[in-house]
Amino acid sequence: MGQNGRQQSAREIICTGEKRAIEMGLALEVGMLAGMVEYQDEECAQWFNEEMARLNSFLLSFGLKEHKEPEACEVFSCSMRGYSGLHYLRRLAAHVNLRNELPGSGDDDSSDDPVLREYYRIVEKGSDDEQSKLKFDHLILHSDSEGYYLPQDFEVPLIPPESLKVAGDIVGSSLRLLRECEALAGYLKLPLSREPVSMADWSVLDQEVVDVEAEYVVEKFIWRRLYLAAKYSVQSGAAIVFC
Image (cartoon, rainbow, N blue to C red):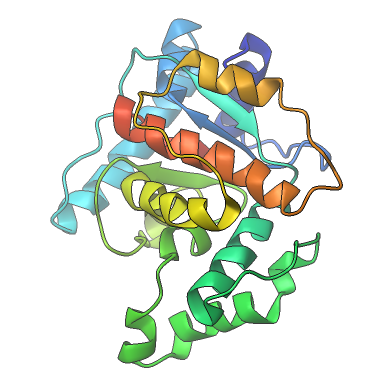
């Protein structure tokens, strides 16, 4: 990926807070600050650094390291099939975790799936024993429209105070997201790779031919993008940005 137009669009949206047209939906980007620096977008770079400074104050208070976003790296971005696509994979993960089986393919109402809702209920009201069995918190317990995954290892997603005004309100770990994607790979019969992420990997996504009749077509579409993003985040040290 990494086409200039797509990168510029993502940067403008997250910097200005403008609402994207519904048909565009969720996108993700890894290396956002590097793109801003490359295109000499000083205003957005300043905004991003101020956002990271607020987030870092929270990380330090939590006993974690500051996140140091690289100013030079390849920039990768991709769309995530509107705002509903992410819920297809979340639904599948909830069924795998709580029922130990695959459901049928999801649909655009996947966010209302009863097993996925049960996962949320356990998070909110479940016993310690129930909560200890949840395996996909970084995939499931994150904003579906904006926010960050950082290349640090922490057990559960973090919730910064509202006063910090961190986009998305929940911060995930890209290392944990990567492990969760790896745990789902076998269920979806998707290959894992030990090779570093390259431009060629993202170009394949651009050229992907989707068989709309295939089983779990949306789940696989979303998985490929999250897997590569999480892997590249760990590799590059850059945050995954939902925007």
